[in-house]
Length: 352
Ligand SMILES: Cc1cc2nc3c(=O)[nH]c(=O)nc-3n(C[C@H](O)[C@H](O)[C@H](O)COP(=O)(O)OP(=O)(O)OC[C@H]3O[C@@H](n4cnc5c(N)ncnc54)[C@H](O)[C@@H]3O)c2cc1C
Image (tube, rainbow, N blue to C red):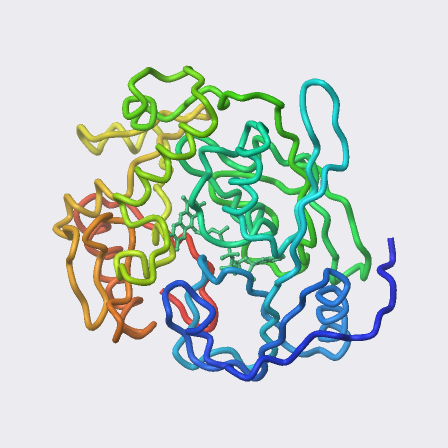
């Protein structure tokens, strides 16, 4: 469907330092920074930049981007459109439409408070709801692909709005058709959630253990959320301005997925067998065994003191120093195990 033509109402923000809009607190300046508080403003801004051939970068929570020290020479559009609306319901569940700029954890808290089950284990993840399909956000045994029914998006090439099914989104492990491709602006996401006072079956062993049960158990929604938040906080995975262990993008590397035949040559190590002849290996284990413990430091940057996968800015770091540290770790793991680590965040105007 063609989006309505609308007057551009985005407001210009004076602080163009992108460090102000990223959880790493890194990144140089943008040409301009604009705020979209309504979906139609965001679509109009993207459409205009596309028509004029101008570079435009969409940012929401800035929690999964690494931006170069030279910044971004173009318009940075901050998504600040909020809203949660029930668009369908029956005895078993609800279909909830969440605006792209809605803070993700506010939505999870709202779902838990309303007795909607399906996203409780995704508590405490920073960023916005519209960003969750980009890398199929996941944690503690849940991922958004389990509950997304549709993604509403503006397609820059076709110049039209689309409603995309999960199959159209191509969800995979920390990936989708949206990642590393700015063709679509996600404007809202529809989640199908069960009406239940209990969580979805707990799939993650550490969470089940902490809850005092075993995998497959259901627990009260509130208990699932509180336990996940506690576990995450202990790993520096809940944003806290006072705690530099949280000045990160969360996990810097994805867990490598390798063919089973190759895995068999690696020796004993923790792993998760995949359904398709692949094996997933915990990147944190590889990193530690390659000589990079928690707290391992670079120039103003360091591996978090609470989690080996989080590379953090200690306050006076730079993107160049962060990427140097990431390269050292990647090369060390390759030399020790022959396994290639890949970055999870989107790298903008910089490279590993
Ligand atoms: C402490 C911490 C813990 C984390 N824990 C987890 C975790 O457990 N699991 C997990 O999966 N991730 C985790 N993350 C990563 C991150 O929070 C998620 O990927 C989150 O969904 C990113 O949302 P954002 O709004 O910050 O995206 P941004 O960083 O603003 O954007 C990320 C990318 O998506 C694009 N984008 C954003 N919104 C849109 C849109 N509406 N339409 C089109 N493109 C868009 C941007 O252009 C950019 O390329 C963590 C990060 C931190 C800092």
